[in-house]
Image 1: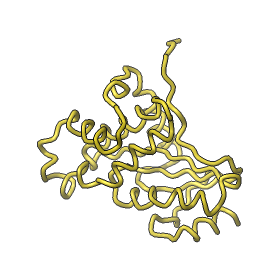
Image 2 (image 1 turned 90 degrees about the vertical axis):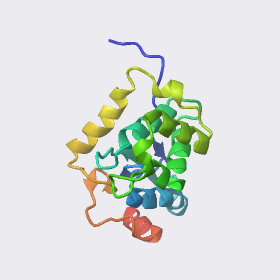
Image 3 (image 1 turned 180 degrees about the vertical axis):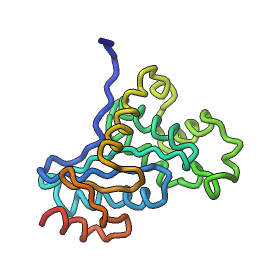
Length: 185
């Protein structure tokens, strides 16, 4: 067994018995829309009533998805854990166009390298990521997120699961109040 000196913090907020798992690809516009509602959801529903878990759903048509997902998970190994990872996700959400290709295949990011993407993430989030990004076995955390999504039949983002059941009719376009009503019924 390998002994590691790092620990990825679970991307979970709240302590309530109802569990909402949200599968997000950080540069997907619909995932960004859902991500931006999660704090409000936790505040409205109550952190003692629900637990929100973010599951990262890397998607190959978002061409820097793997680099960004690894960066977020790397951030979760740093001081502040999940909140540091959340800051990196928020930076991506606030500057989504800087991390995505035009029509998934063109634009200025064609000339960007993975190092350029990490440098942008560091600048926007204020989090030093390069050392944590280079953790040799960080891929086991990435693989866990991928495997978990596949085991649950999830292939796109955002996808929502409540208490282990996929909610096919739940959408990033829903009002937060609709999510609260659904979670607390």
